[in-house]
Amino acid sequence: MRDGAEYTVSNDYLSLTVASRGAEVVSLQSPVDGTEFIWQGDPRYWEDHSPLLFPAVGDWKDNRYIYKGREYEMPLHGFARNLIFDVRQNENQIICTLTPGEETKNYYPFDFQLTIVYTLDKNVLLTEQYVHNRSDGPMPYSIGEHIGFRVPLLPGERYEDYYIEFDKPETAPRYPLTDGREIGPPVPCLKETRRIDLARDMFEGGAWNFEGLASERAVLGNTRNSCRIILDFPGFSHFSLWSRPEAPYLCMEPCNGMAAGTDEGFDPFQKRGIRILEAGQRDSISYSVTVQTASTDRKLAEAYQQSVIEKRISVRKFRNRVVTREKILRILRYAMTSPTAANNREWEFFVVTDPREREKISKMSPYAGPAREAGVLIIPCMNCEKVRLDKQGNSWWVEDLAACSQTVLLGAKEEGLDGVWLGFYPDEERVGALAEYLQCGSRYVPFSVLALGYAEGERKRKDRFDPDSIHFM
Image (cartoon, rainbow, N blue to C red; front, side):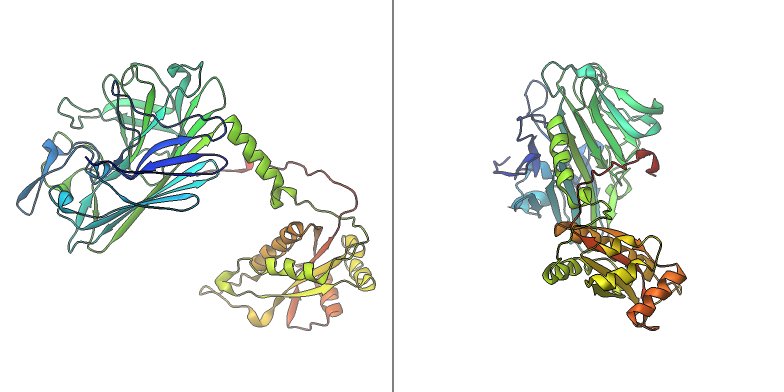
């Protein structure tokens, strides 16, 4: 086993350290209070931290397999965790790459490239796993993670205070390991269960191995405070929980693959849970670790309160201040970043600043009164000459102009202005009056009037978040 270097990136929420040996996460901690979330290793229990499993998960049959008439050894959990990766890093990302060498050929006669990308996004560690088969023929492999988390995390807590909670009720057996470290017959375990309370003796029989769970999320929480570690693992076929009796850690293991079954042979292409990449093919999968603590929650709340989206409210009373043309052009630059179907960009913009003209527009709708006081009116219109139908004959200009109108309001807030969306389309009378005023004939269809300016007085934004209207599938 060779020594390697360690690489660290950090932000205001987390500090991440990855070792070049095995591309292993060796530390994930809070830069605010120093709380370490990754198990730091202890020879009394388990010396690793968060080993990467490739190209095997668990033990293969007698730790060997036969390929093209030759027998190969396959170490426990593969060999990648013991090798030195090439590492690059930038401000918030660590990229680890492994390619074959003489050592790997003894275990695995395939040409591959394995790339692991770790990215910090606020209080989230995003992990992407990329496998490229550069061989001339198909390549069998499994991949997974063996992420060790400290449990308990904080002084005064007990192991028994913690629990695992899935995002969906689970009815699933677990697959125990036999004395020979093969997967034995399934035994009943979960029945319409979302929560598993941790106990010191729960792993005396080994890991809790699951196959084909409905859930894509598991939360490590506790009953004493709001500190939580959330693992999102969409697309993984297997999931395990493991520790040793009395050990102060818990491993959460999203995997594509599992140890050999008692009835398996030595053909790697027939192994249970194996993934097969054809020649030249690439595969990828990802998971994330979210850390929720009092400090991360506080920082997230502060960041949200300072965000443009959080600050934006509908304002209908404005001060008598000039909105400069330079500011208007910057707002329209933001507007033109809006998404459009097939990049049609059907928009055209009319800009009205003259008070007398704003007065006229304010009378075209019973709800357009704010146009009178605004510093500027921006009127997004659909350019009929730019509209394109998709293959099914649909036009998406309404969605495009709606997204554009919202972006104008956000761009205005970015520029220190407030505003309100005055609805015109699809009211035919309002649209007709505005089209006649703009003298745009049949070429343009007015969509909305966005009244912008410097707000008169202060308005507090109401919290309109409604979790009951959100339905995760």
